[in-house]
Length: 303
Image (cartoon, rainbow, N blue to C red):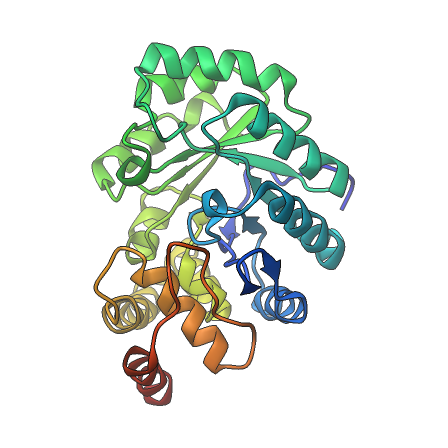
């Protein structure tokens, strides 16, 4: 792969990688290396770090920089690496983008700053100021449940006028929004549109989306790749079969815990039990304790 070259659009599964930790501000380095190889072996189309599943906003800037450098070094351009740069501070998003470029990443990913909610004109102006200073192409990340602000469709349409903004990851869970985003694709044939919630992956691809950024692909990358390919090829029966497996994972693994962090905890716990990486969580969150860990073990045994 040539430096900073990306398929246009990216098609397939781009897992939002968890961040393997072994202490509050320490990467589980052997675990990170095993995890990257485990994910890439599944045939994925890219790797997204420092997103929601990667606990990006909870990590120190020092650790984020280290993770970017180690990940890019390990991947060695076998697939594109996308780096989350979402922050409440403009200059910190820009700093993270520069670290990503220096390390050899291919693009950066940005959700709306998540403390004081922005109006859409303010969000558009923010992009107008930030994008010219970014050293890499930008994906928008629509995550209103956590940022309190959505990239409204008119803002997305305007963003499509900027060739340095190259795609959208939609984690809104709103399929009407997603279908309308598909309707914008004729404006930019090179624009990438990816779905976040894996329960909607098949529907999103059938609707005209290009793939998914799905947390479960940390654990079962080949399953999600196979589901994408079945949907892309129009194999409805195969897609329905694989979709039922994804739903079984969602219903069983992601509901072990009681709090919104349960999905990340479940993914990390499963990876730990499989011997891939540690399941330490960034504060204020805590890895599953033994009762929940036993339930995840039962889930894996049930596979």
